[in-house]
Image 1: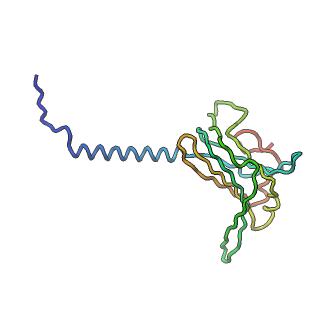
Image 2: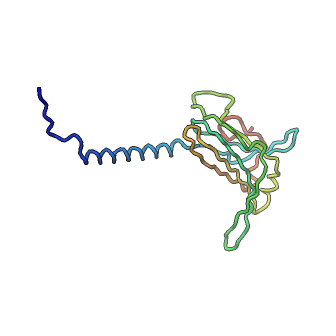
Image 3: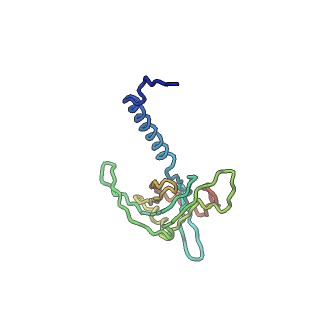
Length: 184
């Protein structure tokens, strides 16, 4: 039994088609990774003012909404002072404020909704002793909470920024436990 190969197995058109197909597939995979596997957190739209035995604290809450853990979390709090420059334009002047627990090494990912975990380890609060009430009561002042973190699976980093500009952003209550931004 003799098989005759009359067609050429390898051609330039096959090679170019395969190369183009591989590049397009790689770009689609890269797009999926960059869009769906970056860190996802949500920051509370308000902050809480609580009085304890050790003093007055202002508490900020954020929640890891990714199903993967986050690491190398760094939280910064800044006072923003708007300097009028005329014609409705402003320059920003930043001054760093203190946070008591601003360096966090690891936040676990959130569990699916059907799993119940009363500890909620993916929900984090940070505290400041600075007088934020006084800062927000001035007309051209505000504060900015900046959170930078890395995704646990891919190592992609992202910076989240939330600004508070009004004294109405402060509530005299405690955050409720869990992923929702409610007060007790």
